[in-house]
Structure formats: C-alpha cells, structure tokens
Image (cartoon, rainbow over all chains, first blue to last red; front, side, top):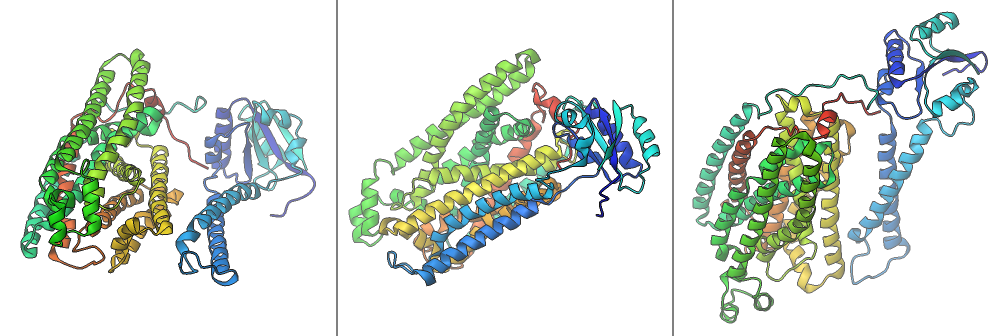
Length: 181
Length: 425
C-alpha cells in the first residue's frame, strides 16, 4: 500500500455510544467504503464485524510456531542422544523416543505461545512509534476512555474531503475532525 | 452486551423435544435388535460365548460412561455455571436418568464374573497353580488381593456405588424440576443449593467411579495396578459425554427449541472444552505409559507387553491415532468447531475412538489374546455386542429426552443465550 506521507490521513468522527458507531460503520461499509477503521476503548465485536473484519492469521502463526518447537526439540534430543552424546540408560536404545516426548511437548507449547503473542503484535503492526490519528485533538483521551471513533481513510477511492465529511456528519457525531499525517 | 440493539430471540412456546426424537428411538431399537442377533450368530460361528462376555464389559463401560459421566458433567455445570451448562442441562439429566439400564448391564456382567475375572474363577490358588491354570505371580496376586477381589466385595461395592449415583441422579433431577416450578425470585437459592450438592457430588463421583473401574476393568488382570487408572477413565468419560452432548445438541438444533437456543458461540465453546479433554486424555494415558516404560519393572511392564507384542502394536498405534491424533488435529481448527456438520462428524468419531480404546484395554487381559492378536469370529463380538448395548441405551436416552421440556426457563443465562451473537474476530 502506497502511503502518502503528507496531506490528509482521513476523517475521524467521534461518537458517544458504540451503537451509534456501529450504525455509522455499517452504513459506510454498505455504501462501499473499505479503507476505514473503528477505534474504541474496549473491544466492540459488532464494530469489527460490520467493517468486514472476520478472520486473522494469528492461529496459523501459532500452529506453525508450535510445529517448529516440536520439530526443534525432538531433533535436538535425537541428535544429542544418538550422535553427540550417546549414553547407555538401563540398556535402552539410544533413540528412545518416549523419553523425548515431554520436552518436545513443552517446546511445542512454548513456541506456540510465543508465536501467538508476538505474531499478534506483528500482525497488529505493533510496536508502532507514530500514528497520525493521535494528531486529532480529541482522540487521545477519548479513544482510551469513553468515546467511539470511526475513521474514513484518505486512501479509499471514495474519499473526498467535503463529501465524506458531510457523509459522517449525517450520523450526528460529536465532531468530525480532519486528521493530518 | 448492554449496548447491543435489542434483537433478542423469543423462546418458542413449546419446549418439548421435537417429534423426530421418537424416530431416533425407533431406529436405535432396530439397530439394537439387528446387532443382538448378529452377536448370537457370531457366538455360534465361534463355538464359544467367551467374547460376548468380554465385549459386554466394553458395552457396559461405554454406557456407564454416558450415564454416570453425564451425571458428573451435570454436576460440573452446576458448579462452574456458564451458558453451555444451560444448553446441556436437560440432555445431561436425560443421560443420568438412564442409570437403571446400566445397572442391569452390570448385573449381567456380574453374573458372568467367573468368565471375566481370574480372581472369581480361581477359588483355590494352590490347585489352580498345580494344574497350570495360573502362574505363580497370579497366584500370589490373587491370594494377597483376596479381601478386595472376591465376589461378595464385587457385589457390595457395585451396589453401594450404584446407590450413590442413583441418589445424586434422583436429587439433581428432582430439584431441577422443583426449581422450574418455583417462582423466579427463588432462583438464586436453587442455584446455590444445586451448586453445594454438586460440589461434594463431584468428589464422591471420582471416588466411586474409581472403585468401579478398578473392579470392572483393571481387575481383569489380577497382577497389574496403576494409580492413575480411575482418573484415566474419569477423563475418558468427559471425552465421550462431551462428544455425545455435542451430537445431541446439534441434532436437536434442526427444530425448536434448540434451533433457537443453540448459538455458534456455545457450540464453539463446547468444541474447545472437548479439545481440552482430548488433550488431558492423552496426557494421562501417555504419563502412565512413560512412567511404566521408564521403570521397566517386571510386575508392571507385562501389561504393556501384552498390549504391544504379537501385532497388538498395530492396534496401539491406531488407538493413538484414532483416540488422540485425529480429534486433536481436527479440533485445532476454529472453523471446524463452528461448523455444525463437521463438529458432529468429529463427535461421532470420538465415540467410536473411545470404544476402540476400550477394546485395546480389555481384550489383551485374556490369555488367548495377550501378546497375540489374532482373528476369530469371536473378536467381531466387540462390534456386535457394544453396538447392540449402546443402541438400546440410545433408545432409552431418546425416550428420557422426550420426558421433559428441553430448556430450563428459571435461569439467568436464558436471556443471554437468546441474545444475538457476535462474530469472533
């Protein structure tokens, strides 16, 4: 996505209740908006739903991480026990796989857990040092406390500063603010 | 959520089981008769009824798992609360009310005691040892375990256990109806009361079911013991009961009232809950194996050797795949848990896998089969007898389902379960 680094990032409307936000977001999505996002102080699942956000890839990242942990530990144990440092333990074969299962299982969980946490952050685009929305004067305190925001982004082909502003104002928000990069 | 637009669904006026549940009953009875006939034919072909007795215990353990395991999960949902509990309450109650049939199955197994249990067949160890019927280890074990492993102790323990389960099933089923008839303002009192009974009931259940499985299955091999055995069966009951509960709720959801109350959210939750049992089940089974394998002690390892050597390793490997690998891999998927049809297939598979696992646990206890997997007409009894017994049980269960409204209305979760659900991001 080619992001213009100057000019308008988008228009952000502030709503008093999540219901108003969901109504506005649904109307925007239905009228063809795709580059838009909702910002709320706590998760509002309906908002994510109405702007067409249904799936993410965290589970896939977790699965791959878990499998990598499993293979890594099992291979490590196999290598240590059969090649690097073979020991005779109660006359068992050096490749005694039942004994390898527990550490391999632990690493599966460890890798899956870490992949889920870091994968989630990476897919969220975090950590992020700068986001244009914080230029909106009412955003910083509102989005972390009791206000609900809908942002129509300038990269959407439907974006037009005047027309989009009128569109948002039709939902009677507290305010509509133009956000600069 | 408070802010959601009020699009809550309305509970239908008629909460009784849909008419197709009667069809399940009829079909189950037909299957039961067909397989019972097959079992008799197989016994004639085999010129022996020995495998009928053994397969009977498999059927007993399966139906016991559904009935008493259903009672246990009923108690768990009273203690834990949650919307899934409201969803499953009536089916679980119906499972717990099938106890009389399981009792009848158990009495029959008890009458066949001499065929099933070495400790019952051998009364005089010295002469049995001399005639080569048992070896020295077995003679020693039978002598030392005599206070516990003897017919009267078997009967007394069994009857006490069944009396306790029946008491809890009767109390919980009765109180649930009285709560329904009472005014809604008394609901908090009933919730507390049912919770208190269930909390203690879960402890009593774990102890009594451990005693039962030690007598009914573990004692088939007099020499062997495992301290995790009761827990293994306990988790196994959770495994099969959740599978059956999913199967029941999804099948019922073709018509009201389950069409209205079964939301994707709770279905997904049940899928996750089942996944936890799939995991815990293999965790315990593997722990037991790892400890015994590491110790490699002559008095313990034989149990596994009986189940690995002589081609039994094939069954053990399949058991691992059927019982754990397949349900585990499938239930990992979020989409599958939300898909009614696919989740139902997994639940059906899990019940089959449970039966397969019991086959691996039961059959190698007997001298002709230990370390020697071989075909006989009799081995097919492991299909015929349990299918007949479980089908008869399903007919009973379906009948019990029709005897009560399928939804409890005096429950604070009812309003929530009727709310529209939200997509999970």
